[in-house]
Figure 1 (cartoon, helix red, strand yellow):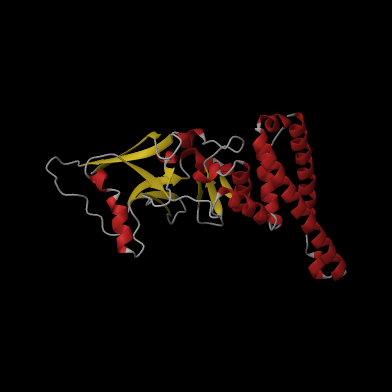
Figure 2 (cartoon, helix red, strand yellow; figure 1 turned 120 degrees about the horizontal axis):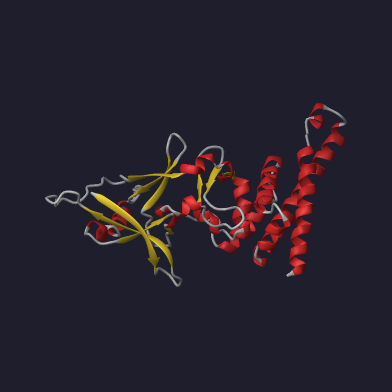
Length: 286
């Protein structure tokens, strides 16, 4: 059997957007038997991430905290193309830091345009981690112990095996409910970051706002979101610095107090203050 996936306009919902549509044809003219997939059996469509030049793009491999602040600033649109690698909370991010749009290499891949499934739909594309930590996309309906749900999902694929084209979807979500709830909980999680998380976020912000010209190209609504992230990070950094200072004073030079290294945070807080001034200056000029 031959599966063909192509990108075209999807009319699902109120807005038009790209979607991925699949068709299936037999490679043997005499074959009249349908594909016999066992419950839970999925078809491997190959490596989704990292692939090609992304293997060499170190900036595409992000820690979870760095991805959280980028995703928040870009209004969660990049979460569509972020895939957890399954190792050390690393996420393969297929988008540009400054624009939030797909990298050129990723934009040329059909499967980058798969629509997120909505409530009541069964995802027909599933992400899996291989032993080599590469992310594969698998086609089919997962079997999770509920036969009636599995049958309902397979019914959505009946037209595909009858020679018609079917839009495929993938299960992607923010993990926090609505976008409004996600925004509040993202900021709440940032307020609990530890030293290594804040250092990673500082590096991420340096990539996103590497010059005043870059800041000027950001739309006002994203500048407002960036200001919230920077403020939250700065407050958390100051809080940790105070905690470390108090610990050193209370221990009076003991090994516990001496083991606290706050130098990374001292450098970070100065960078955050500088970025805050840049963002505020841009905001006042609008």
